[in-house]
Image 1: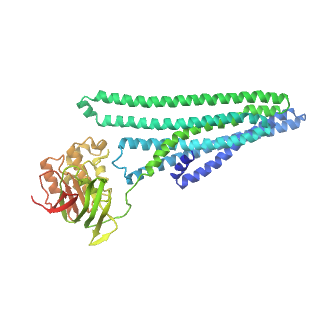
Image 2: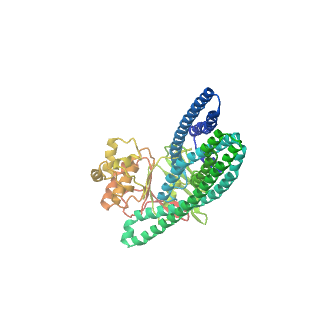
Length: 546
């Protein structure tokens, strides 16, 4: 539990920590004030037996007023602690989601994790922790204080009755420990089963046409049913465990009340406690038992939270290779003795030397898997070589910066927003005149007329393949400050006429830049300056022969 709390407090900022301190002070006041009325109940009832009527009435009015004041104050501090807890949970949840997304953007997880499962996991874990952790801590802290203060009041009434409750408290604590371990196991199992179900659902939805085409729909329905049954089975185990827990704690509660009733009645007969003391015990017997029940519930909830917290902690401690350095204008990229591999037994580049210069158009060809995308990711700073250096020059001087890059990715993602808003992702300050020019250059006029300002579907699924490619091209060209342009399969999804027209239209955008075209097409409508050929783990820059 301590590790869980430590991990959570690592995620908090100064404002949240300050609010936590205020919350703890509020809980201390609430716990004391909510128990204090037991003292005045005892005094009020015992005042009935005072022989002096005026004194009796005075004490009854005094202690009754103090009782009411403390009860109202307890309600006030209870509501205040709830409000502060809600504020902490809301701020913590929103800040944690931003922190997770920011870290993910800079981590090596991009492209390695299933996006649907990962997004569901991030949202589910942060939501679960933010909604339950601090509330559980509030109840836990309050229960411990209430129990300690309650013991003090109970001892004041009668120490023997207090000692009767301790064995029951010990049994409850041991029960709590066993249930906590089980709760963690079931929480882990349920999360894993739910991830399998999410994956099955998302793939079934995204691949619906493929499943229909090959008559595999029923098989996939069977897979979803199996995953659903697995989640249901684990949920039943959790519910069964919680039911047993409630039965055990409820029984302990009733046993405790029974002991208090029996022994306190005997002690009244023996004049060991007063009628006021008996009444106070009966009205406030929960001040020792309820905290034990709450402690059990909190431990179960924190056990479930610990699963989400551990997963959040793992994501926030994922390795990151992102370099947060400035971007500057460059005119030369120099690769010197570069070696890179994903698997050490299968090196992609081995002692590669290459120089790329501005005002040059480079054609890169080669079979799939040879390393074209890896090379591009290396020179733009998405990946880093295991050995050797990739350096950038501006006016013949080395600079400690990355180039501004515009990259037409073959499978670039399109957001479910309008055509123009997708283009503005690359340049939020683009003028209407520049936007209109891009629409013409990329042959998007008919697409824009069709959709206007309406969203274009998840990953642009309302567009055809050629329309998606032209939109991604417009987004690439919108980044005016880029001095490295990369086009991965510009010709794909475009008919020969449109491809030829676009190649002609984009010529003015290529001036004073390092331009790399990755192509499989043999139709050349660009005047390339050199071809980059892969050979023996290196890249050779060769003159164009067309």
